[in-house]
Length: 284
Image (tube, rainbow, N blue to C red; front, side, top):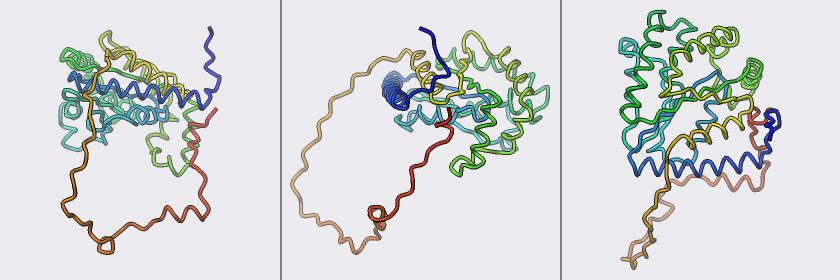
């Protein structure tokens, strides 16, 4: 059967399958916890390609003590003097943990390279060392998965334009993001060079077609689940105990407590603002 990537995914189909995949992610999490596995998932790609939205859906029902997002700010002056990979090593998972990198050490292969934030020699050293570094992680038992979210220049510009007028997403835009529009080919060349050196057999780049964000999320999550050898974990059966008889405790009088006003009740008699609709999720 042929695949039609242009057909819009019905909302009920998307939501139903997303929920099913998220339940499987919970199963995977329990396996990670029980077996002491360590998982690192890297999210890279163009600005506005949908990395953040995919991460949000992956983590929505997971335990934040087990699955944590790593989104590092620009390096400090001290961190700039360290071995490049050093600041990322501190965020790698211990046994029974999952780390999702919202951008990663691949900053040096992309934005740092294009924007001149690193020297040519630092960039060359990164391309030499990165495969070695990742092989070390894998040899030590870490399950490393790398996803590149791909989007066209027209779709990226469309999403940037929607963020300029959307108060809920305006914070996602930065001068560096906007400059990426004028450096499209430079980023493309940097990405191609990075893939040549880092798309290694032990840790392949998995390219996610992200013109349609909903399809991209489902495809990425399904691929991740399919690549991890998790199994169902049988849980102990718990029973809710009966409360013991009262020993005479009396609750503190409400008048002595500072209570939050019941703002919600006012909504029953007033006008309610329309529900927020993410324009990028509703794009055709």
